[in-house]
Image (cartoon, rainbow, N blue to C red):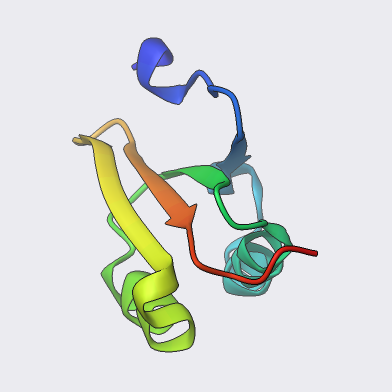
Length: 88
């Protein structure tokens, strides 16, 4: 699992397992909102966040890519990529 979590260039690690459940979605939306086009958030969680993914796709549409890196009982690791947003 460790090799799946190591962040690459333009990839920012967000381990939701350390965030209280009642704050998770707000923290995730804030982190995704801070990404620039071409950046990725490597998201680590203790379960598959299917409702969260649906909410992110609703907000970001085609600007969001979702790539599962790991999907097992120990952890779910997903790369959320952002593309096509205006450059700041």
